[in-house]
Image (cartoon, rainbow, N blue to C red; front, side, top):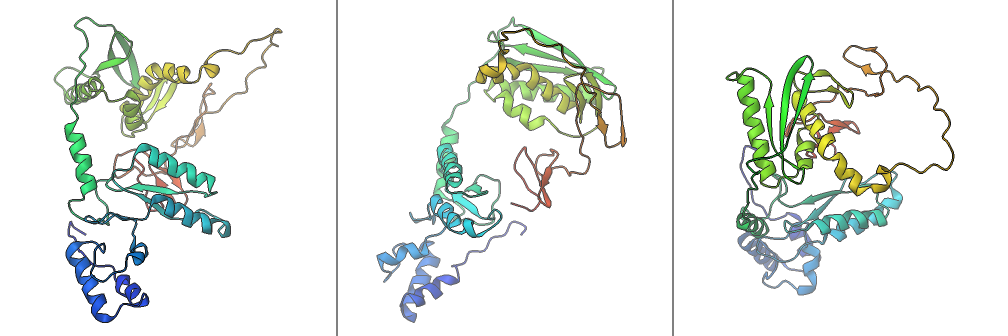
Length: 346
């Protein structure tokens, strides 16, 4: 708590050594070695065939052994048939685990019949309660790899196509201008909502510049859309856009609009069968009159005018303490679909 650390040798180590037949002097020498070298590997008098007994979820900073992530999955698979619900157990992976390792963990868990798993790659969050060293070699390798990468900014040509969209959120109007690469991808945005020189104008201009630089340095638009959609702050309300009838904030509207405008074609390209209309051999019957869909506004607690779109706005979920997105129910707790933070449940 408060940034402090404490380093201990697991108290069950000496108990395990006693059960394995080591005398008091041998146990003391091994524990002192662990405290000094931060690993049990190479401890004086320790038999090699006893090493697996002391393997842990994390690899020791100066060691090489750890429980393979499939060990966690197989252990849960052995218990799952006797349990009606999911198992609250973390599948630990080292800091240098690959995307394929994470994918394989989920696939193998599914094949084994597990109802749920929680995968944790060491060092994937800003802080973690347990670590084997302040300077973990796996984290150092990741940092060195990241430092070796060189980011290249892909500027737009001096003369470029652009798209201008007028929007209104809760009666507050504005314009978003999107500069396009020759390929049609967005490369910059400008947002205007107030008179030049005002606070809101300065904030919007600064934010738009940051997003533009991110796009030009290769940050995927989908990542930005997922990050900034569903943010909740004023002004919020109805928009007049039938595709986005209500927005929880200006940022929510802008990035949902960007996603609908520039990511829709990407989704259609990935699913061409869904994009093309079905062929008809006979004339289609006359469509029946559509049933009205009542739009519910929980804040007003009464139905408004019928619309093509039905939605339900949750007002009881808290905001995420990490990223500010609205969390969703997760059992008796809440979780953030944006960054993965939970309010207590795993």
